[in-house]
Image (tube, rainbow, N blue to C red; front, side, top):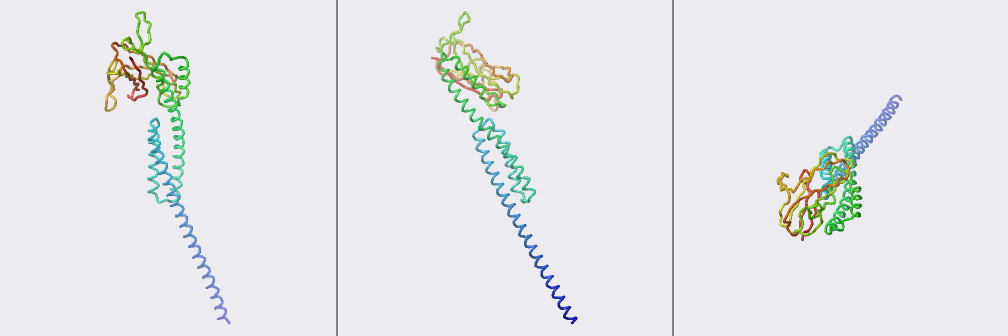
Length: 292
């Protein structure tokens, strides 16, 4: 009777141990399954994040190729994307690292969205500016048609220029005149009569640009490829820039009208080209006119 009781207890213990073993196996299997699922999910997230970064880097390439005003900012933000991509590709893809990389990606994406919006505004501004300069060239071909309507258009244009670090030089034009002994100046388009070239342009209002003196180098080239005026030279990177005169402007965040006279004689007939460069010898405006 006692042996029978002991056998029953032993069987019960075996059953309990078997159940515990099965439970442990099931628990270990679930842990491994969960771990594999987590690894798979993190691997997928890592691959998706890397693909998104590559796509954004490619978008930056397109914007950089199509933009000069924001080129430095775009290149700097693209470099951050490239650096993050390298970190993601080298990482083991653990949860903490992926969370950090995703947060950094979203931050860089917000910066990119801001630049995309600014880039769109600059494109619209450039279209408006190009249209206005084309209209100005038409007016210059017949200087006598210059009137108050053009001034109103130019004032309206300066209000549409987006605020930025660079100043826009607008409405560049040149008029040839005959200087009378009385001091009176008579407009002319004949080379034989002209003895003064009157150069004028606008520097657009910009509320966030630094105030102070600004220098502009104006270059006038006649139909024989001669540079008129002072013919002084300054270094410009790996080349030199020869200019006709320097115009120094006191800039105080408001629109400035610049007017300069270039005296001369025996002007050649034909097409003249006028270029305006900033202190970095960067071309900021250009136009042309005819003397017959």
